[in-house]
Image (cartoon, rainbow, N blue to C red; front, side):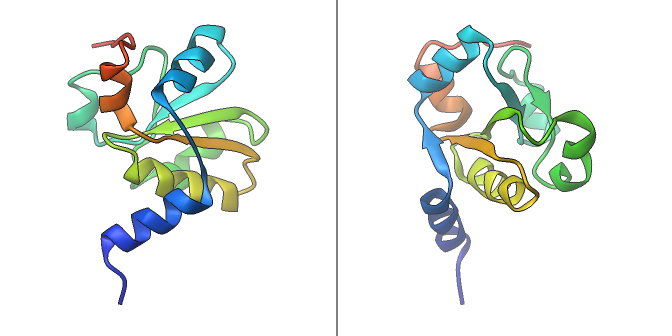
Length: 117
């Protein structure tokens, strides 16, 4: 039987991971849609400016109305695990350019990324 850690590790291996530096560059260039998959109580503590909030528990039912399938999508959570699972799901739904921020929101903050309250 697999543990949550097994699932996270497998998802991280199957989806493209980007560093906080790469995410900062994409954000600055306006070349990607950022999606925060954290729970609302986490988002209320701060988020990446302009990010769309689609929590991990409901992303499948909400994403199609929010983001075109051919958009460049950067998913993030607190540390990169939930976003890897969400990225895998979006790929299965036909999204073609989906990545996960490997260090999550923590990595974004540590890299000096802006935060929106």
